[in-house]
Structure formats: C-alpha cells, structure tokens
Image (cartoon, rainbow, N blue to C red; front, top):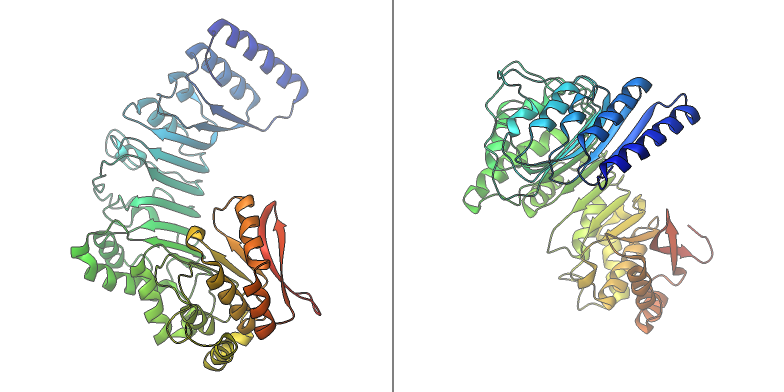
Length: 426
C-alpha cells in the first residue's frame, strides 16, 4: 500500500475490494505490506473492508514513517511486523487494541523511546497478549534501553512459543517467561551479567520450568570485559539447567562455548538429546570437532569454522592422522552426524578443508553433507570445484577413504557438497 495520487489510490482500492468481495466470499486472511505512507482515506477504506469480511489481518510496516492513524482502528490483527520510531503513538494504539488477538509480533526499534508501552498501558498496568505465539525484538539504534521496572504479578505472554531478543535483555526480572513454561520452545537472547544474575535469582530455567524448551541461542558479545568472571559463573549455572532438554544449542560467543565444553567434559550424559550445535569459536581444530562428536552421539548437525588441523595432526601423515583419530575417539564410529556446516568460508584454505572433510568422513561414517552458511550458490560451486578437482583431494582420498566421492547437490534450491560412497551410496 503506497500513496502517489490519493484519488487514484482510492479508486483503485474501491475496485480491488469490490473484486475481492465477489471472487473471495470466504476470505479469511489478508496480508498488507506498507511500503509508503498511505493517505488516511485509503487506510480507512481498507480497515472498513477487513472489518466487513471479519478476516484476520497480517500487517508488515517496515519503514520508520508513522503508522496511519486510521489503521489503529483495526481490531482483527493476527500478525504485525513493524518498525518502532520516535513517532510511535498510532503503533501503540494498534498494539494495545489487538493485544488479545495477536499471534505474531516482530518489532525493529530504530528508536527506543516509549519501549515500556510494549507491556504497559498509560496507567502503568500490564498489557496481556493471551494468544501471542511469537515475539521477536531487534534494535538498529545505539541507544540503550533501561530495564523496565518489575511488574510484580504480570504475565504478558502466557502462551509464547518463540522469544527472540537480539539486544541486551531489556527487562528487570523474568517478565517475558511468566506463565509460559509449558509452551516456550525457542529462546534467542543476548544476556549481560545483570540479566544472567536476575534470571538465575528468579529460577527462570531451574527445576521443571521451561519444560517445553527445545532450541536455545545465547550471546554475551556486548558484555564488558570487567564482568567476564560473572558471566562465566552465571552462564555455567544456566547451562546446567537447560542442556539436558534442548535438541538445538547455539553459542554465539566464546564464553558460552567454553562453558559448554567444560560441562560436556564433566557430565557428557547430560547432553544426550542435543542434535544441532552451532558454535562461533575462533580456535576450532579437527581435534576439537572430533572431541565434540565423540561426546555427543545423537548430534546430527554441527556448524563451526575450521581454522586449522590442530596440534598433534598438522605434521602427521594423513593416513596416520586418520588412524590416530579413530583410536582416540572411539565413539565417533557410532556418531549420527550427517551435516557439517561451515561459516566464514572466505578464510577456508582448500588443503586444510580437504584434509578435514576426508578425515571427518573417515571417523564419522554417517557424514553426508558439507553445507555453507550464508553463501551464494555460485560461491558454493566454486568451493566445490576447488575441493573436488584438486590433485591434493585425489591423493588424500586414495590414502584415507578411497570409496568416498564429493558431489555438488542441492536441497530446497540451496547447493551443498555431498559425500557419497561409490559402492554404497549414503
């Protein structure tokens, strides 16, 4: 919906709504993408049409211009993707007017002014979203959000299933986790020491709470170095509570990665359910990967960056390295690992990558896919050509896994490198 000529827009919308009413008499939902600021008259016409049809409405308002006041009158909004700017009054009206019917809410803050209006009305009372399943909050401004004052008995998101907040946790207690321990399945948070301490004090992840949790993504990359020891202590306590439940874990910084490894060494049986592991760690070696796989028998997918073969392997003949890895990490032969996903592909050194792929294939027989994070298809093809047609690959393959071949394949239109056995395709 955009402006241009107001009269022309009104005529076009009149015609469109008339055709929609005739062609789609049972219309149940409408998706509205606002790419420019529509006139109030056009907005009112659209609101009237949606109200008459009693259909649910999905609005995508992704620029910083204020939401038209007329749209604030909508009362059947099921999804809202919007940008929160310093002119947020009509957006707040729309939110509060639809809080009882909203199911998905995605907000990008280009200004944090009025943030408290997300969960508080003008008198300081809590706004409840009883049917909201998904809440995603992102921020594109440098202004910090002061943690909201605690709302003691409030539970604004009682049926939430997905909570993603990509900036430092903006609440002063466990407000977004109240009442949804039986439904919250996916959590993505950026936590500083203050947030870690307060969630620990509230027992947010302790005992039988978060019993539906399946996917957890944690980041502390904005944490000040002075608080590093507190982060290590509190992140360790958090992981102890949750790692036995989740099947997917993503550590976006080295602190959480280190804590994961420390607990994995002490109590590997506590991680039996883990199937997908993402680690953003800058010192990953093949020995490190083999050690992870050895302790996580159910792991199906591992994403990381391989920077080097690692001490103990770099200067060893690759056939000897394969035998050494197999003897040292005996559990890897039973590993379920199928997908190895690499990021930071620009740092990939082909000889290093060939060695790692083939050695990993030797110790993990189920491995069948090498994927690449956020890489265009033509780049994947280029990487594949360098891997599969290098003389180094042919020589190493004969020495380690002569029956394994690399092929270029695709799933859902995304290219990846497939590992196959010539005698027995996997």
